[in-house]
Length: 161
Image (cartoon, rainbow, N blue to C red; front, side, top):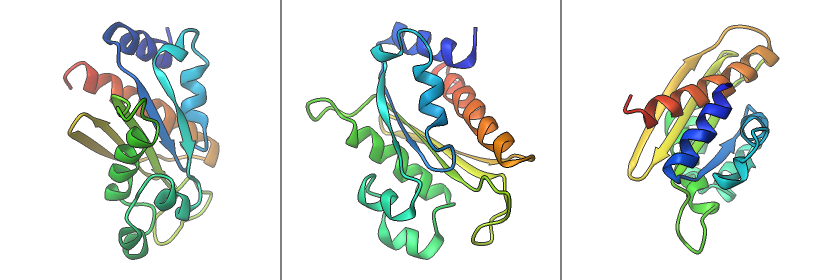
């Protein structure tokens, strides 16, 4: 089975929902999840907040934080994960899990951050974990690797890692 299929099976068994906020992955992460039959039972949806201002207006990322640090920052990823849980809530109840990606896919650096510098955040309840990744390769390699690493980190967290 694939990482996504394993994760969807795990979420289904635990009756947990996931909401996804993506920047550099541009929808690839939620697409990987929804490619799995039965994903509709657990995937609430996804928000592609590629533009910095959408991180603020859609996901509630602090305007001051974005102005001071830019979009490639661990706190931005954290706020995106928390914000997407809230945004894709059901009757005011947030999704169980928020999963967010932000970083630089390349080919060049952005705002002093090299291509391949990425933050992935996972919000489960009151707990938020942020992972700082440095991924080598082409733009396509980086984006695909972020999807895989995001799924892998969420699976590890669900298993107590």
